[in-house]
Length: 565
Image 1: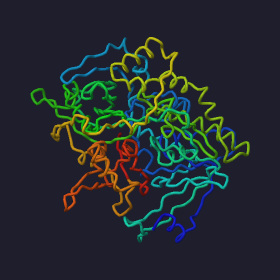
Image 2 (image 1 turned 90 degrees about the vertical axis):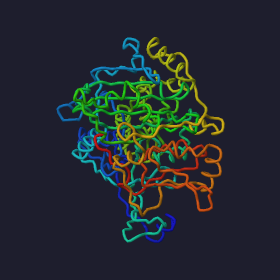
Image 3 (image 1 turned 180 degrees about the horizontal axis):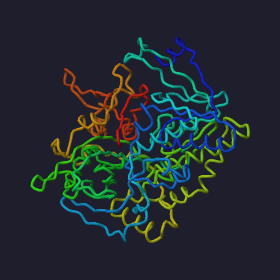
Image 4 (image 1 turned 30 degrees about the vertical axis):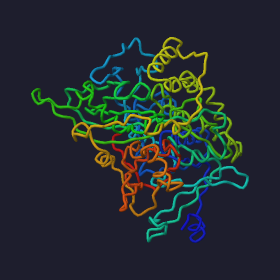
């Protein structure tokens, strides 16, 4: 049965009315909800707010580096320290390395531009902070519905956004209702705020419907892959923030690494690859595994029996796309009946590798605009005060200074590094020129025949790993008997075009082993989609060269359950 047939047979859906519906229980969505309730409390009235979160709890799907600038949190909760917010480990030292295969050169800190300095910032688990924000939101009276996906945007007759519908539960692989069937429900609001993170499923639809990206540069993305380890105390330096650029990526592929020392001998190590890479043989996951074998990095993880140093233990794994286009790719963020906040819009500052402060700030700005509109008796119109407030904020100033960052790196690592240094260090962000971009990330892949195949080493199971064992420690799970949430517009394209022309890049860019090309009995090829492995990173939706893969929401509660990440 199609969704329309299910609705006509089992409907109508029940509905609930709210002042504001927030889609996504991450830092942006929760900050929106919190700020609305704070304002209502200050003014002595009430605003009804609900947050929908597709993960099993707030923070379950959240993944970030994460070094956090507390500037926006200071505004949301000036006394967050006294309130017990989990920002416990300040950055104590910055190290930036330019790596070759067998060595590295440290860039002196005095030569690092301001965007690479982390004084006053904290190494955190963003998942833990998100859980804490969820607790604060509930204490203020926000309703949070974890395990519920926002699957459909609802519209009023005049075309404005009316709210969202949650996905049906208990639909089998064949599309038919099972004994566990439960019809989704409608949540109607005067304003609906989309805070789904990078490449949000509904945010993408809203941007297309209202043409919010007209006149803007195409959005640009990276994929970030991350592991949490516990290392020997002798090799742990609480507060150390180490970044690198260079090997194993070539000169023309954007990317770099991070290694952050948290409290309690925990270390997060990760790798970011820009999704505008050209070689279809490249695998971001394998580049990350290879990076860990660098002498300057493996030292932290390998034991030394003679010195009584125990080998490190890998605890968790995750991957997530990063919206990195910056100010020039930022769509219009308001439309009749709603707004986009956080990474659903693309406020991350790629030069700083930070987006959480921007998520919190934009959530607050959208909330303030929505609150004033509600008090004026308005509904379902454009919250124009939100983008106006953004343009007058410190966040706009910050993003404007970094507006050319990604464009310079399109010209190669050497040019990107040099010009970022000039813009950020010499000119201090007061840049008299603006660079534009014309092509989306998926257009950059070259035919496989024009590129050098990459032979990656086999994992050793100690420092380097395969994808399946990695997915296992992401605690990813989906109800098996449900329709695949990784959908194809045309089932013939993966073999007919992607495999034939690009050597099947979906088997390599996915960090979870979801896509496999396998042989049929007659030795012909077919694409097998292992949807249960999906960690909801959205890379396939972004990088598929034919834009044939469309990521849609699975049943609520499915996906990763990140712990400590």
